[in-house]
Amino acid sequence: MGACDELFKPKDKTSRYTDFFTVNPDEPDKVYSPVYADYIAVLDTVPQLQDVSAKKSGLSISEKQKIDWYFRDLPENANKTRVAEFVRDVMQKHPEITPLLKLSKYSEAVEIVEIAEAADKKE
Figure 1 (cartoon, rainbow, N blue to C red):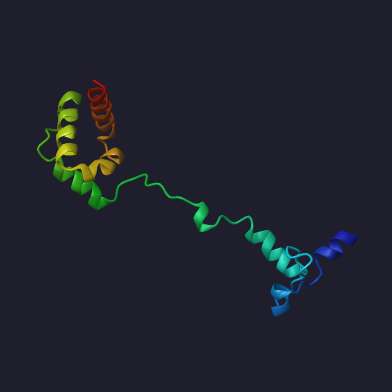
Figure 2: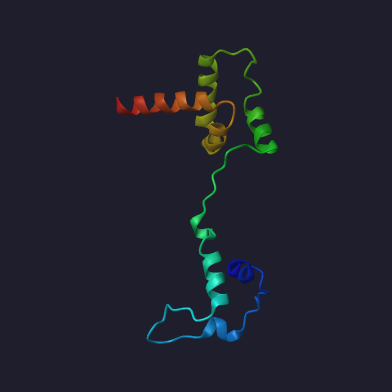
């Protein structure tokens, strides 16, 4: 019953200037205000901006259209060899589009081309 009473007590969550700026030089890391300690406990579990990195996992509509434009001369029924050759040509002419190609439907052909280029460099 005591725990229930404690849970349902009205809580004052207003912060005061002294909650944040009370400092004891002997114990600089000690937090004297329970309200401020609650804020710290919550905010320490929230990922900070510098801890988060974003990875692109898909193409926008305009990026898909750009890739489709580069591959407009490739026939729909082209085999994997023809697609890989076409991808290699596009990657050589437009190296800036390679990251987009890795996210497109031609990603398998990009991997094939990169493996072939790595093998050529070793020889």
